[in-house]
Image: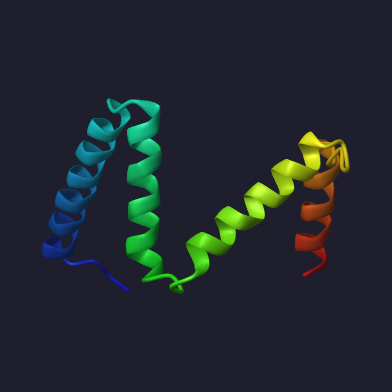
Amino acid sequence: MVDTVADQRYNVRVNTRAQNLFRQALELDTRDRAELAVELIASIDGSAEPDALEAWADEIERRAARALAGETTGDDWKNVRARIEGNLRAG
């Protein structure tokens, strides 16, 4: 597909606008950047199931309680990453 001059101008404007927004976002504190990221992802993914947020909060609480009670030690990040990469390679 060949870009026309108009397409190229559009891409420059959009990319410049996105870059400017990105630079502005980087000036936010960590919490505000995180909230912005969540909102941006949600705007792409569409609306979540009504009970999804509550279900995730419950799951996080359950996992944190198990960790704090010493019922689980979790997995080392290197091992988890290696397992994920292996799964991705395997398809």
